[in-house]
Image 1 (cartoon, rainbow, N blue to C red):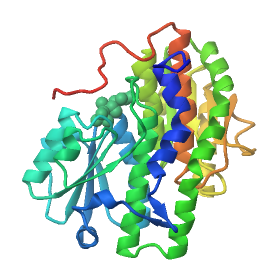
Image 2 (image 1 turned 90 degrees about the horizontal axis):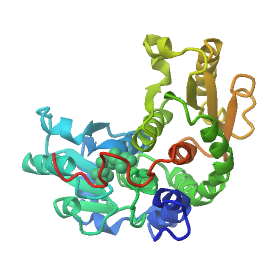
Image 3 (image 1 turned 90 degrees about the vertical axis):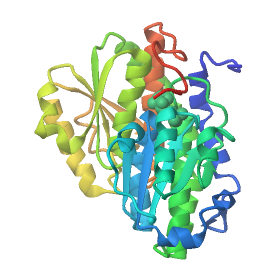
Image 4 (image 1 turned 60 degrees about the vertical axis):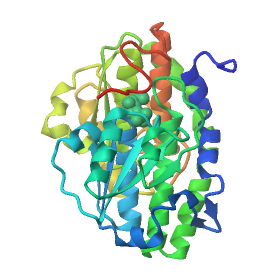
Length: 369
Ligand code: F6R
């Protein structure tokens, strides 16, 4: 039941504040993360791991790529993200001190299931992040963190994506607590930031009208580029994937620092480019680098749509459009930045008269390799 919404995707985007409140519910107690379901992966095991490999496909792999920065920053454990289907055939270097985390909304993605089985057979500990109760992948894993985002019907993943990042953040904070890499004050501060995310998500949804106008104006666009740095980079990839999936428009995401190593050659007059702008408060250096990137592409005629923290005056002179984000700390910002990109894909698909929920050639759950 779409509950009055024009599509399941529109409904699921709007449900994100509630979905994230559910991901967090009962898991933060006095500034400490508690995940009882981790049973098979106790504190001793988590203190002993020396490396984390996250396996996932598509959108889930971008959620993992965002969380990687946070887990490394908080728990000081090296984290790599591998596409499940690449991992299995890469003869990966694993040991009994490796933790293999899988991320899957459905819990049935065959590529990811096979990666988990491969890891288990190689003797590594396995943790799954999953949105579907008692799906196959969590049943095959030593521990599971359910995202509790509620059923996701639209093929294009939205609320599950944000919930995957939040669940991985919870794990990262738990790991940091167990390993003593963050102080009690730091943990309290970060858990408080997470607790504030549902409210910030509700605020960012207010950009819907602005994005709709933009999408209508761009309905005939043939190609859209997305640029980001650090946690904004996987968000750029996710924005591009959403657009490909439901609008059938060529879209590519790049690390902003890569521009001059090739992609800037694509910029010609009128080329739309979305830029994820980090907050100048959280990361002044990254912010000024992104502003230079915007100047570089603008000088070559790009049409720049900046997604930036409200009040960020530095981007105004160079951006054709600014989509304002609520004030948020470094690792919370990607959870908000992705929302206008989801809305843009939704609105563009709608403007083109396409079936938003059932894009051609795609299935919600990919149960073949
Ligand atoms: C994108 C999308 C896919 C899935 C991918 C993994 O909107 O939905 O890229 O994210 O097929 O699916 P799960 O998370 O079920 O393993």
